Amino acid sequence: MQTLYRRLLNVLPRIGVQVLDLGSGTAVLSRRGKRKRVAVGRDADLVTRGGGRFAVTRVRPDTWVVARGRGDPPDTWTNVRLGDTGAHLLFDAKASDERSLQLAAAAYLCGHHVAGLLEKYEVNCVFDVGANAGQYGRRLRSLGYTGRIVSFEPTDEAFAKLEKAAENDPEWWVFPFALGREESSQSMHVGWATMNSLLPASDYGKDRYRRFAKDRTEEIEIRRLDSVLDKALAGLSDPRPYLKMDTQGYDLEVFAGAGDRIKEFVGLQSEVAVLRLYEGSPPMSEAVAVYEDNGFGITGMYPVTREDTTGRVVEFDCVMMRADAAPK
Image 1 (cartoon, rainbow, N blue to C red):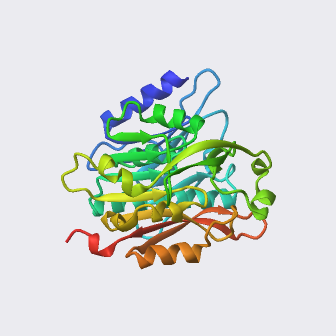
Image 2 (cartoon, rainbow, N blue to C red):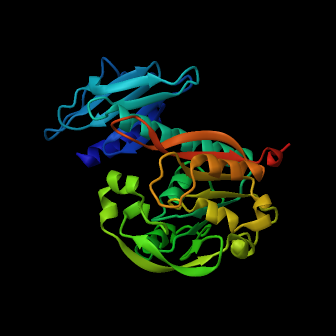
């Protein structure tokens, strides 16, 4: 079945249909230009073999979704037009609740917003602080960013995964330490998956996440950002760095470690907290004020997590750029 699916996707571009493979047996097909029209959509033939099925759904005059599976009717797919942008959001209404859909859409929009800014501001080096297993770096590559990525991850287990993610990418550099205000060794709370932190969990955090109940620590190394800048930017004739921070309540400490050299960064991305998950982490208002005082202005705010019961946002991804760094 998988072979037949692959053959179908390989043949379609030859007859004027663009194919975007979304994985998991799902693809989006688009017709562009004055090419031969393909009779899919409401009158499409479904390709079947061995009990499988391709369900074809027309979502606009030149776009269709092809999903592979057993008996999933095409009408479970919902198509939402995003204003007058020409963009459409496609999702399986049967499998999506409102909260999950909102957060997924926010993550998608944030990624594309950042990718557009990296291109607009001619960023050629992204500092990925709190890289975990390399999720952010992989997302940047999938969105078309080809410049240098410099990732920092201090914990042994996550760094091993990060190193593997970057092993075939010569412009993705990885370092096994954290960044902070002072150079030192400290104990980090680990075993919290993507939420490992140098700060202990708050009472609110413990109530929200069961993972915080299992607390063990790992000794890690911390360096200042300004002490590694020259090495990270080596070989770039006109460095235009961007600072992404996702350090579970420690972002302002990372920022402070840049010292006066923070002026060299054209933009930043920080996870700011409305409801604090970690003891001692700054509230959103404090963090944003520090960034603004250093010349960065907000270009986007995207919810990362949200309370199920109240709808309140717990954390935002805050994207900020230095206006005077925009190319003329």
